[in-house]
Image (cartoon, rainbow, N blue to C red; front, side, top):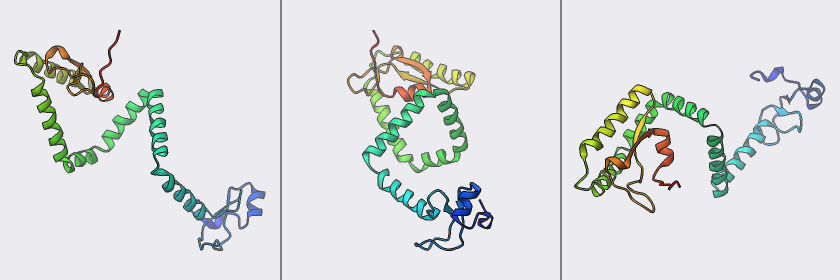
Length: 192
């Protein structure tokens, strides 16, 4: 409520009127001049301060971070379509922010790209058909334009996998949606 003068003047009046808040016009014992909650009489500013203090005390703990991560993962698994829509919308709304992020971290992106190129060079045998490999990337670009969904070329067996490393050759490449590729990351799962 923007105008505190419209609120009941006492807790008793608020409870009688069924209102959730009241404003006495007097500061609380901590000096806050704010509305109070009818259910317990607590000052809203004091209540907010306690909530924030508890949040910041708990926020940095490993248990809190793990609980947040697990909750987010459950939500992504339960609503993949909604997450995709939200992500696309977020990317549009934050295009400038994302661009600035990449500019500010240009050296990190360059280092990552150099590492990736080195990995491809190490895992590209001399007998590899460069034309067929290049054509996979061209097809992915055409598919992205045609479907309106970003498609990426993925290594079936990752170049930098944890247990196994693949080659940078055309028969180790597949074209998949970017979201699927990012979710897959460097994992390789053997299917029976």
